[in-house]
Length: 514
Image (tube, rainbow, N blue to C red):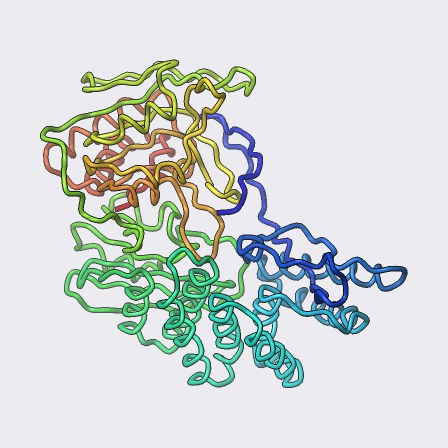
């Protein structure tokens, strides 16, 4: 993942404003023949959205230097405008950038630049035949000079460019990109992006055609899983368009495609239309199969519906050969992050029942937590949470300081630590379910715990009421111990809490991941 940027701590009782994601795309790069200091960038720097701040890779003099800098700044603006679904503004910037690029004849567009250009030119009503032909020529030239992962990226780029002009040709290129990624190392970042980026337009295209069962097949393939034959919801969204499909208790599929122009923000409470919510009313529980950026959004379904996000198949663990012989409840509470961070001290943790293992105060360090995670069958973490959706780990847990000064427990560390007890995990920390703003995967603390072996994770994207958390999660834990599923236990605990305390809105943002 990308280098971890600095983050600001978010207190448990304060809903700090989130940072807007500005995608600073890379500039056009002049070839190595132009200057010996030209050099390729790492795969992570090629990520879209995001990427490095605009910089001139190939130094130039006088007026040419100014034009290259203009092009770099224009590339950054185009990326940002595409992220904001402002295609009119992006088209204007693209036209200006092309004029500037004409003064740097040896310039070579990056793969990410061509990807963004395809977004801008995809609509046949606005992308001229000349512009499309020029971009396709650039893609064809680049295919001969890149690694397999980038070649798959180029295929999906051309596929999405053609999809609304020649559906068959676009689908063929997108499917070819997916097939190419199946031969690559799973850690090839370009391959992973190409695969996910290909499934998004394919799924939306099937939704636009009203092919609801095909939407389900594409969602299954993208997640490397098999969706439920009944009581399931699927969703995908990109660039202001979305598709939602459901299978009711009778197994019948129906859906809706929405191409209404909108901004980049997704209103989860209105993403699923009323008639589709009604189709799920008779379901005892609903499995949700959602592609980024929908996965991880709270309040997708009403408070009185038991539902959970199903994590991608390649993020689920292999069956572990050994498991603990008994149940073991672990609680981490009253951690003491460095005083220099200025965090308010949390209220003392309270529970109706003592846990088997408790890490408290200075003993609640990241290393001790990971060690105790191994065999636990039920984990509760009551701590400060930090959220930065633009960062590599999106959110992390702030625990007590190690001798070396480390106090953050991140998704990357959790993902690499096998959980033999297959625990149910409650993250009673603010913003612990925040998902990184990547188009190609849902990267978060809950998905990290699932990848490490957890059966289910309960977490929120919002603040946690420190005073009420102990009682609420005790109620939920007892319901699970009495045989309720995590999703049903969360629903029933939430209804009970809202009935007793109508103003307890924080419980509405809690979600289950499985």
